[in-house]
Length: 254
Image (cartoon, rainbow, N blue to C red):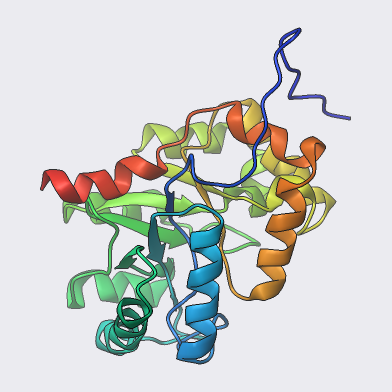
């Protein structure tokens, strides 16, 4: 059993919301394009709830995956504009950015040469890998990504068993310029014991750069609320420094 987060004697830290992160870097808020929000009204409800959790900026990242969600850049941006207008009309006081969560496969390799990718501020691009086996040419793809001026972020590495079984590959990803983004609910066991174990190991090793809700629906919000109300589940949040707020600040420096 892992015992990772021991507080210094006499020191107590409370986590009441997620305002210390300022920016959520992974969510599925764009209506009608993937397995996230279906309608603008649903998207607006999710955005409102994220604001209540303390976020000032949201980077939403719809799936781009040929076999399930073959979204084009234009289709995503069109739907995002509808969401943006609704958020502005509701005066929620939150900054929205539209990127994407790209599944790394042959289709993604073609996109690299076909059109500009949807990125975070600072030209960061969010990448999803296979949950079963990594792409055989992963490091070649990462090199191509960076040669085009993008900066790779690996989404939820705690889900990739092959990485955790060969932990030197996690170090190799970092050495090759990748940031790693952990899902906030993973250490709570929401996705299962194996993913929880992987998340805690990555946190203990200091490998995680960013945290994201990976929000799809209200059930995720309920789980986040439950996590925040449980000191045992939420106390790891203040144990490390994460780079979330730095990403949107990058847009102000450009």
